[in-house]
Image (cartoon, rainbow, N blue to C red; front, side, top):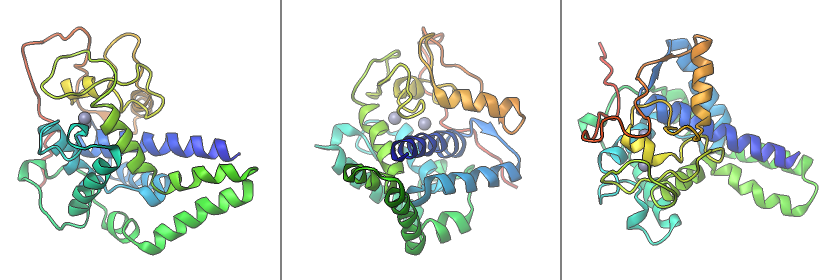
Amino acid sequence: MVYAFFISHWMLCVLMQSLFQHRYAAHRMFTMGPRTERALHLLTYLIQGSSYLSPRAYAILHREHHAYSDTEKDPHSPHFYKDVVRMMLFTKGRYEAYAYEREQPEPRFRGGYPEWPLVDRTLAQSWLMTLVWVGLYSAFYVAFATSPWQFLLLPLHFVMGPIHGAIVNWCGHKYGYRNFPSSDRSHNTLPMDFLTMGELFQNNHHRFCMSPNFAARRWELDPTWQVIRVLAWFGLIQIATPQRAVYPDPRPQQTGEPTHVEIQTA
Ligand SMILES: [Zn+2]
Ligand SMILES: [Zn+2]
C-alpha cells in the first residue's frame, strides 16, 4: 500500500510538473479555456501539495534556463556545482526570488503563465498548509506502513517537486546520449522516460524547445505527450505548436527558436 502510494504520488507529481508548469506555463505548447485552466491549476496544487511550484516562478526560471543553458547565467546547470545538493539550494534561492517577487526578471521572460494568488501565494506559501500536507502524508504512512524502513520514503513526499527538478536538471545535462548537436550540454538520459514522464529528453527538448512531444526517434517514448494527446482528443486542450522534433534533424543549419509563444494580453 505504501509503495503504491509512493509510486502514484511520484508519477502524478512529475506528470503535473511536465504538463502544467513546464509545457503549459513556461512554453505555452497548448491552450485551454479559463475554467479548464483553473481546474488544472487546482489539481496541480492538490497533487503536488507541500512541494507545489508556482507556475509563474517556474516559467520565469525555466525560460532563463533555455536562454542561458549551461552558462553561468543558467539557474541550474550541473556543470557549475560540485554536487546536486548545492545546485538544488542555489535553484531554490532563484525560485524564491521570483515566487516571493523579491526580484523582477528580464521583461522577455514575463507573461503568458497562469497566475492565481489564492493558490500560488496564500496556500502554497502558508506554513500552516505545508504542515497540513506533511501531516496527511505522515498519517497515511502511520496507517499503512508495514515496516519501519518504509518511513524512509516519507520525507521524499514533502519535497517531491524539487527532487524531480534536481533529477532532470542534473542527469539531463550530464548523462545519456545526444541526438542533436547543441551549444549546451543537454542529454537524453532514458529512451523510455517513465521516471520523470518525458522530462529527461533534455537534448531533444533543447534542440526543439517548442515541440510538444519530447521524443524524436522511433524507439523513444514520452509519457506526458501521450497524456496531452488524450486531453486534446477530448477537447479539453488545443495543441498550439507544431511537432518539429524528428530524427534526423530536418533543419540542421538552423539554431534556436523562441522558448514560448507570446500571449497578447489586453
Ligand atoms: Zn535543460
Ligand atoms: Zn523547457
